[in-house]
Image (cartoon, rainbow over all chains, first blue to last red; front, top):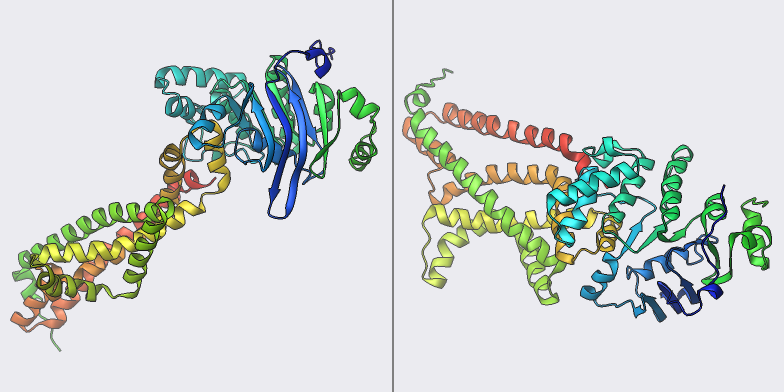
Length: 261
Length: 221
């Protein structure tokens, strides 16, 4: 495995504008505070993994990034601008971010190829022929060219998730948000999805990945953010987080997972 | 007891004309009720508050009032109130449509709300507008999901057209009554009509079920 050559630490990015910035983000569901002042930056080309116990706010932060959830305090910035809450304005932001969900959420009434082309044709007004060509190329990229005409119900979980990744990529996003992309998968299909994600990272895609796959985070992430109770308790390169965690909370969490470095 | 089916064999054209009108009335009612029901269902889901209240009252009314009462009111009371007299066929079409549309709107609503929230999130995350989300993602799945219930409403509609006989629409039931009275052969004539209704409806209900089995996977997210 080759070492990552990308400059990653925020300090090395001085003066550069982060692609995504969280500035004291607060999110409440009723009386429950899910995010309690989260601040972080994600730079172009970075792969940032969000880890931590269930209910610690990782997925909620991801949803606040593209406006699927509104924030109750603080700001989320994308490309220097505050992510708007206006439904029309937020669409422009969403079109520049791809999102992949735990349960795939492929559209069941469309073939794999149509799932991929519906965004570009409906939202961007791309011509059907050109969208189809790009869609087939994307299916190729995730190794599912031969499944172009298959409906989601005929695909395995791993195949569905790879189509879902292709669907998100079809919008030519600048950032990809992954919300526990392998948590609903059978163990034997997790690898095929992680491989696709790894290749995407190698191509320089900016990625935020909520995951419980510590091996993936260790190998692919440039930085890891450790969440607990709606806060980031530790942030750093994977070497630090997994081999030399500075915080008791991080050690506890990794210990519970049986992680031993 | 002797049976004599000659009144039917001699007058089959008379019954056939009734059957034709029953089919036309059924299809027209179903087409209009589907469009109106879709609009009402979507209006209750996505419309402004005042519209939801109005449409909710309409649906509750239709669920509480027998279709026969709606029909008779449309034919006898509506003209007195408005001065607009509807010919029997049009009165029957209007009354049946207004009644059936309420039930269509309820299954549309149920179908739409049964599509899981993740589908909405996925469509919005792509950057779709609310209208694109409903048209491209939610409605196609909802339509598949409500097919069995829609089939039930279709068969109820076909059966309900028989009440149009009370305002003298010459559909199958009216023709049957006329024939039975004129020939003094109620057993043979009414039995024939029962069989005709069964022969129409049995394939319809089975057909809808068969279609649903083939397309069910398209609605399963």
